[in-house]
Image (tube, rainbow, N blue to C red; front, side, top):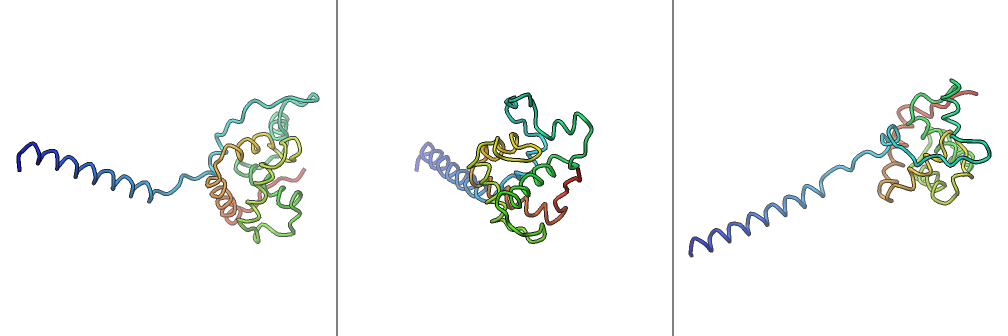
Length: 157
């Protein structure tokens, strides 16, 4: 076999090994968490209407009113409100399932944001709609895990 042919053959084998390794690594990587995104997520500018120019959460922040401790907790509270108020499920946070949270997230996909209550309906509506279906599934799982660890940390008015 000529030297040139040997080098070409070696190059092809090396490429095949690298491609195979890349595919194997891509399949074995753990998807990035979705829930922490809410801490830095910037929704499009709030569409002012009827003298209201920001979300309830932002008014509470502006006027130093009680609000959940983190933006993650705000999302969890709003999703939990979908579970209890919109879906009317009679479950406690300890009984929550991924299916219930998936149904709650679906409210953000099937309703206009103006028809959704909560601290940050505009922001959460935009976030949920920006996610691909596998990311929404992951978000549902992460919310269930979060509720299992910390509960639903809402505030009393």
